[in-house]
Image (cartoon, rainbow, N blue to C red; front, side, top):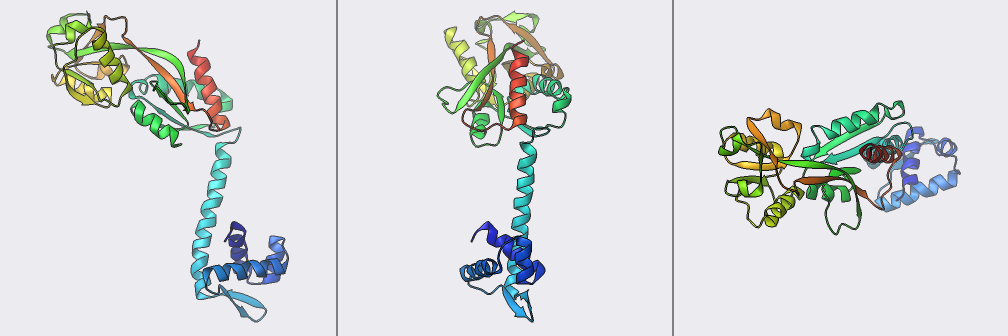
Length: 294
């Protein structure tokens, strides 16, 4: 069974005449007859029966036509969608990113990109997650581009450094450290820490901070995203180290400067090295790189 046979079958079912169907398909009548006969043999059922000079669908043919029409419709929709995605004038970008860049950087970079009239027809689908899951789904073609931390030994993925995010410490408003404006690792090591889960790229950065200070974090709670961590801090369940972002102001917490030479996290643009990037995705990628290098 092949795709041509399905088109031949649908056309013959519509016209109910071998000669007219062959003319519409631009093939010879013997070719059409042979194709339909081969399809019937493969299915083990007669799809057409003679009615005068015409042919009509059998019971089996009517059942099969329902599925063939659905299948060909989906294939045609898929073809149209792909043509739209790779078109020069429009297109679509599947973008994923860490939560810490979702409130500020992502809206600004997309808005700036779409301000160019040449890009105004390009659409976006956006997703959030931790770096490990983002890269996992990038490799499975769920996303085109990802803003994330870097992961070692990912030979199929290119990581382009974009910018650094500063780290801050947040504490409850009534916390003993709330009177300070800046703290060190040793200032906070004795307090319960609300941290990222072990799959997060940020967790490794935070653990390294404590290791370089020759102390251990007192991790009591683990979360995937900074907003949940800020909520726990506001509930007086501990303190947290997060990337500095505007969403912090939505919680009843005090933000403290982190006085350590390692208190930054690099944000990368990640994409698959050997995967074709449609024009819209390539254009957005180049815009992101150029914008963050200014």
